[in-house]
Length: 548
Image (cartoon, rainbow, N blue to C red; front, top):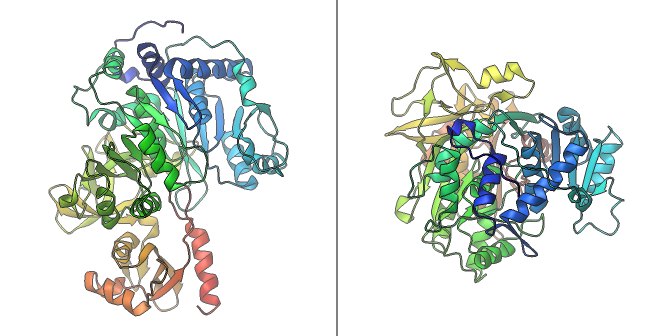
């Protein structure tokens, strides 16, 4: 590996490519990425990314070029990110569940100069290519594509690694990272981070659990990563890296000189995940609330026999993670700290729910440093029992790509200070604790009263036999909207509307009781655990029209 000048300035100059290059020089023989089939040292990983970066440059990519990554979690995903960062290019995260029309829409929005995808997703790429031209550089990663899959357009990924490695170049903090997020409704939109602001926002997540002083320079970062006396981070991301929580925690693990573990397939297999955790000594597990924890707990309780005792941290963000599942998980990993992060792609973190043992349950999120609760007029809400929206002052994204109106709405300047206010409502509990109520766009207005779905869902998920639940408002000529519950129950469990209303009524005001109940076999969620509310509304409307 070629040397670059050592940086010892302020960490406001942080750039992930420069940091990872420095870590690779410091611990070249340490394993950076591991799968069932291979293990790459930091030196090997850096060289592979440098070869791909050279190919990008040969094809005219450079600073601010966009690189579309249409892929599930695997080594090539992380290699592509690293290569893009090395040349100041902008990776574009694309949901690997997208069909051709959805892929074409995102390609049209992001205008990538390169596309990297696995052969198994060729049908979507072929369909997208019929709708709009593909980028000039298309790289295909071999995987377990079905025999009847169409020929995959593009050049084999391995051929892009034949170029001589691009020498490391020190990059600054101004280079950008896109995080496309569709939320639960609406057209995808890109939140734009700079490397410097993202790294600054992650400092607590990276170093908060370590017995070290926070770094103030790149040399400090490298020295911490190279220390053999610190506990080694072995990170397994189970949600896809198109989800910010998984991506950022993987990036953080590499800052620490840790090892990132990937499963071998796109499909989530809880038993395979448990085997990987035991075999590779995973210390940091990234999940997506109940959607991932429930299958893991079920497998553990069914006698999977996996040793998960080396887990020290389990992180989740943006999804419901019920207290019951936290308690059941801790029974198998008593040494783990469960961290439920209240955050968003738009910024944060806003609050943390930290559980170190059963005595910390029920879990309550507490405001993070820099977070506060605001009234609609942007004045602070501090009175116990009052409601408001979460806000954050600190390192945050530049805003939404090419959307100044929405950027101004979500990132208001209040008393001369820029805030991020995505619209998540909470109730103030005192001493910094809050109760999550839900995103403002999902509030149900029934008879003039506002009902926050998350508040009702929490009660439903505590019911015996309920494994998933979503609350929404449906149009009603009398009430404007009526509270409606869509529930998934365990096999053999029976649930009636009366039971649901009685249980909700025991905990919440009467107007919050669901007037309609639909028990379904499954609530379809994205790989990150989010629900497509438009699709769910259509499904419930069909059920109602069918007289169910």
